[in-house]
Image 1 (spheres, one colour):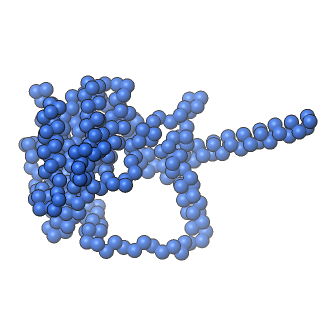
Image 2 (tube, helix red, strand yellow):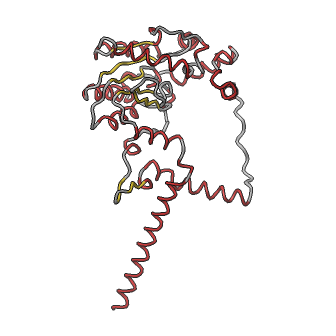
Image 3 (tube, one colour):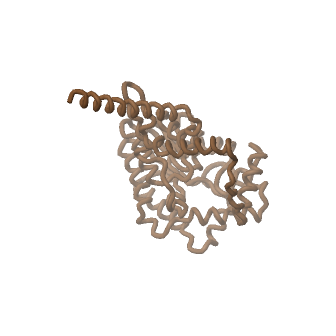
Length: 327
């Protein structure tokens, strides 16, 4: 009997030891693998490290590079309103916000959000579990969700090194939009800071702009959508926490505006009307980029709706002034 108990204890100790060693190895992998130095984990780390009371929220039109002194910029590409709601709670549940500028553009409720997996979930934003003062990255959803995928990818890479893969490469997208988008990427990379939208031929700009409009057109019945409900909830939360909130309609090219009017079943005008009514009802200042003392000709843009870095640096301090001077 004593021998049987001892044998069981040894097996249990070996099992627990194996689990602990495996957990340690997984944690080491999370901390050392370059695969976790990807855009998603860098974004989460950037957000977690920023303690600015003043903030600008939006999508890639805002970005993460601060353009106004004393502000944090929180602009995840393709950010959805529910991510915005999660983000403002993460940043300001336990501290008071100051001045806050929020993008007021139709893509918040655009068609291109359908089926997109959110990054800024409450679980991903939650700080890692701490054990004896050590934060366990492998126990957080952001890391654990990709852990085994990355491990398998590393194993496949090793196998591929030993025995080259015979897998076929995906066929090239032959659509005009795909071709022109790739051409835009090449020219932008080659042109560096000197690149602007006019370096793409007019017919190609029109194709790319039309495609962007289709993606950003607000969904049907956006007024009653969960997305708009979350957008409103984020703003009301910030105000309840004491923030001064201003809404900013980010820039688009003149061609973007013109083509949107010719688009069948466009809901851009309806969104702008809703935003104006919402700002009025909530007594929020709404600043349109056209009100700024700044040129927005095509040479100031990288594409249909993103200004150049140089122009962004000139624009955002003016937005701050238009939003909060006299308040």
